[in-house]
Image 1 (spheres, rainbow, N blue to C red):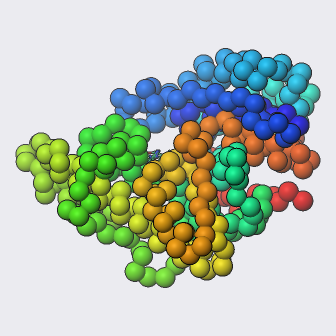
Image 2 (cartoon, rainbow, N blue to C red):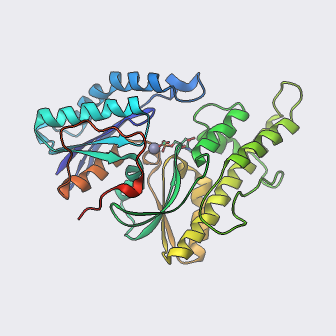
Image 3 (cartoon, rainbow, N blue to C red):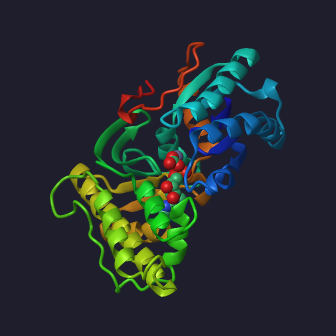
Length: 343
Ligand code: KG4
Ligand code: ZN
């Protein structure tokens, strides 16, 4: 089965063609980062309008790149939630309508399930069951995964998501949006021993997270080291970025180890934008090596939002016979553990 995947849940328009026999045939991505940069974050209305402008040309392009026409497409997968309602509506309307016009089934894909399954697009995919750490701009969750749709949430953030914490800390350091990659870059020049930031909620049992205290700690540290209206000196900024990144990475690693102990599993996958973080990958690889486990993640471009993960997830569900009615479905809130299993 050959599936066209459409992702428009936030500020990236992603389109891909995935074939159940041949794998990923083509994918393309348009990022709206430049549109939102001057506002320091995503402006929902601008996001929706830009998806409207870019989606159809990208679909044409990806079909050409995959050397196929609409007649070769057997199903359409579109991100239905969670995300920004206007942005979701664009992908859902276009995806559902094209499926109707082309007389093929359509399936509504959960954005975080897309992320969770992205490591399956790699050459050496993980085998079920595993623990998944989902770390994006909107979500931080530990999930026990027994198969597609068999998800049990083990813990999640009680306030800010990990990516959101990176973005907010970056703003305090006057870095560009999105802040995660900027903090990571700056942290590379920092001295890890200068500041010690807290590892929130690691001193008590449980698998939930809280990153808002770390945000306040960062703000206070910046305030202590700056003069009137001026930012701290370059080295101090790098040292703060480094201490912040180390605290987030360490907190995530402690909870991942705990989740593996609790479930008795040895395989961890990390997915979502923050899984692109090199320090997080390093830290988890070290930790898992020590206990004979293994950590899996997608290639860089499939950690952040993309169409390939939606085409893959949708393909699995379409092959299993799942499809939507004619209604256009967009769900800004949609718990991942409410998804149906494949059987
Ligand atoms: O998964 P994603 O593309 O979008 C959502 O579903 O939210 O994740 C975006 C988030 C942003 O908060 C961004 O700052 C963060 O992922 N991010 C990173 C890195 N690359 C992206 N955070 C830390 N280190 C990175 N290298
Ligand atoms: Zn995402």
